[in-house]
Image 1 (cartoon, each protein chain N blue to C red):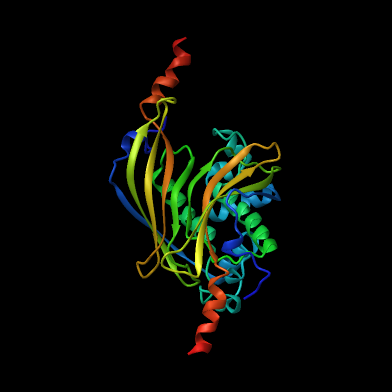
Image 2 (tube, each protein chain N blue to C red):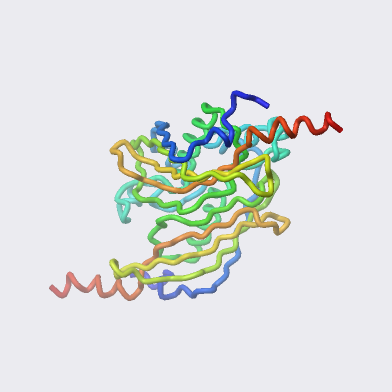
Length: 163
Length: 163
């Protein structure tokens, strides 16, 4: 056990965190779209001008990926004893993301719950909000995270020695 | 108006479509993770061996991106008069995706509804299911799509001429 880590017991419902600064570039928007979302408005300004987007915008999935990068950098910094994620709810793309935008993230811990079936872990639900440089909300979602219980680990570790 | 396109009126609730074949490669898994999800179990086999994943697995967001590519290729083929997506609900990562896996998609049209505020468009909800080569479900979500109404377009086009 690494006492330096953040465990389930350390999470406080209502905590708001703000972090990240992701500069969106034209090259990256086009490269992501070519691989994963080759719709015309994500590939060129000319094609985008003929659509409701008006100009080149990032794939919504690219916005998710850039957001994940900011989340992972933050989790790594806080040394969270995470166990991955089973998924998320209510993802909404609210505004287009354009080359030149700078994105940032705000998270709010909505709830947490110890697992009934797996006493070594708990889950928590966070509201994730992504803003651009004008403080306009571009994406929201409710993510689910899994995390270790501090209490479960010393008990588990001692079992083999006790036998 | 392009009569070749698929419009809101053409969508039939209950329709199931199966398509796509996406070969997941080690290089692509690592490249995506380096950019967007640099957690150890998405970057190297050695690091993954020390976690519950056991071996190198794709970022869940990479699975989303690969799924989007299969969806876009399919939409393009069917020439759907789409207007993008406001988001999705209940995304769940059910099993890890590994290099060597081959993914495919199944969609089921759950519901459709003409917009009250914007008579030229409607929305529809689809269940999206992603399977690997063993027909095991790796990811599910409910996506929301926006699409043009065929009926709205000739009417709109005639308004400027009538004035």
